[in-house]
Length: 176
Image 1 (cartoon, rainbow, N blue to C red):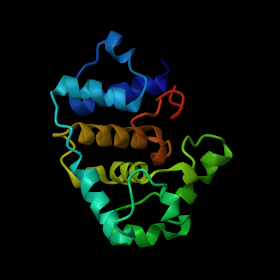
Image 2 (image 1 turned 90 degrees about the horizontal axis):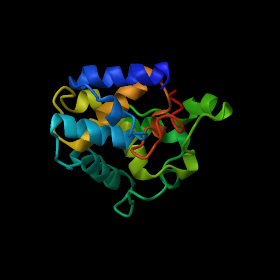
Image 3 (image 1 turned 120 degrees about the vertical axis):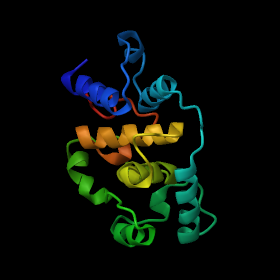
């Protein structure tokens, strides 16, 4: 386990006021697994994804009701239209074109053409979660995931679009 990983674990422990057992933390390798472990430790059981559902409804109003969570966002949004959508949603959106340095360094895990609407919404909510709900008292498993994503984004600075539940912390996010 590298220094970045240890620091990230300590950040999770501090934020959620928990302490991981070594054997538990060694069993997890994906963002969603860390989220599930923390949910068990802080006794959060609700699977409600109110933030995702709410933003998805707004996306349907903006793009049309035919848009599905599994659709590719690139079918609806060009990389130069981020500001217009950001203004409509009144939320900060990380412009994919700002991530070209990661693509150049072969760091970026998710390719823009492959990014689904759900993954795009996850990234928007991770970017804005500090302003959307009380991060000190998460009520749902999804809120825990968003907080974890926000901590990873702040601490490590990897591309927000890569911070998905199925992403490997070491392989995909390249956190050593």
